[in-house]
Image (cartoon, rainbow, N blue to C red; front, side, top):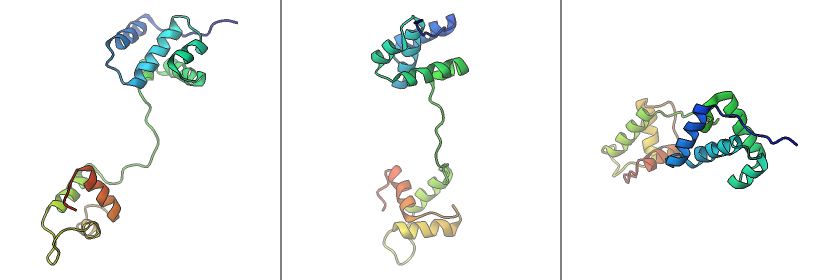
Length: 144
């Protein structure tokens, strides 16, 4: 049976070796670069998968991405997910509103009151009180 391996270009091989030796990569990118280098050096998929503790289909995916995208194969691909509905500017306005004085008749902002006021002021079309709380939690605000 013929050994499976990867043919890296000379510049890519030198680049990967430099990256691996410097040790300043994220762990995922380091493992990908090391895996591709080991395959280039003639090791089999099975041996490299045991060294890096990854499955063979994972290695095959790395090789396919390298052959398709070149050096871009080290980087993570964008992942699908729900798009952000509230922009950073809107979040800043919500935080600023929470830090302002509460409406007359209230000692402090409640999350429900804040969410209602945000919609009333037109910062965003709709927001739940839990989403408002999450925004404030991410800013380490202790206002509410």
